[in-house]
Image 1 (tube, helix red, strand yellow):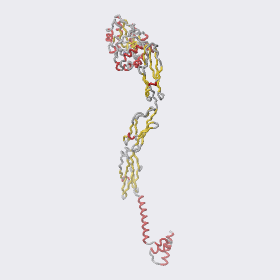
Image 2 (cartoon, protein in one colour; image 1 turned 90 degrees about the vertical axis):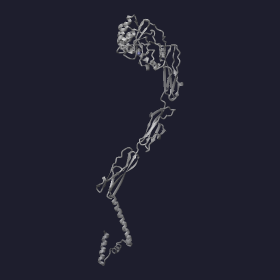
Image 3 (cartoon, helix red, strand yellow; image 1 turned 30 degrees about the vertical axis):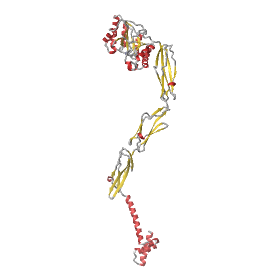
Image 4 (cartoon, rainbow, N blue to C red; image 1 turned 60 degrees about the vertical axis):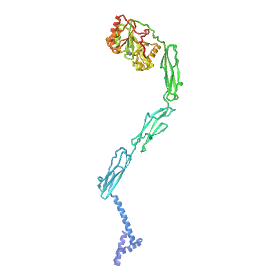
Length: 511
Ligand code: ZN
């Protein structure tokens, strides 16, 4: 302003003093000089033009920048880079556009080609045309696989392996949702914890799992006794060790290292125990026992054979429904009989049998053929249960037995070849006496009262011992028993119970 003021004052002064018409250039020249702009003293018209154009250029630049700042703009909703997992849907978030207060959002065109089923990078283009303006904006969508593969181990996740052995791979399978089967790419490494399985998918997602392996032996050896676990010897019969094996899961055959203790005094009736002990390298112990029972042998032909005597025998009881009634009839008729009992029915009926003078004898605990005749041990285990029951109720040990199905049964063949012959001998060795029958009432096969009566009475004979097979669990038998007794009495028969002095009526053994 100061400069302009001075300039104006100077021009006015000169117009006043010299009164000459001056052109702008003439005035400016000496004026600028006068005012101290010495630097521009030498400017030629050409140079002045250049300066002019430079100024113009800068003006254009300023204008361009200004225009750029005020063009329409697209604003993306959401981030400019989005990641989605494959198989996920890409949700277009859209964009908005504004220009000088106008909403141009509806004019935005969106071009997208995102394939969520294929890993890759996709560009979504948002374009807008408004008058002279052509605007474009992009959004990047990355379809990625972030899900790691999975390894499924076959077998268990944890194993004990013998210290001297290696783990035998059981198998595994690796799958990835994107890559499919990756089993062949699984890397296996032994670590301190066990076996480490690792797999990587094409997107470098890692998965690993460890199968824990403990190098320990916790399983004791197994001792297998040859022969029977319970052996029956007759007084003074030589005891010979039937042998055994001991196999360990890690140490293998340890038979030689088994320690056997215990003795059998064959000259003395009693129950003896032979103990077999073994310890494996890891200190796991196992022990089994064999029982040896020495008893006086039963002479199969001993006992008194009583012609014309009827031995009523009742199997399979006691039964809540029928046994009590049968005991009533026997009591009223003053007849003694023999009951081959099972593990069924109430104890008080067995007590009654005993108290009322009948013979309580042993049949079977389970009456399950497949169980009873599975082996010698199995038979005697079953017999022991019913024997213990009788001992518990009556206080007496019964040595009178009847085989389920009788000694001539063939059903036992299904479970053990030759077992009836062996059992017969074993029973005698232990001093038992076993009884079959020579008259079958047919009640087990379903005979009615009348038929039971016929079956029994028609087969009675004065020239033989008459051992009658009946079942105190049968209603027909309960209903027929009084008439049978009457028939016997009226025809001169006597009734006896079986005891240890009764001759053994035995059928032919078929197995
Ligand atoms: Zn039976």
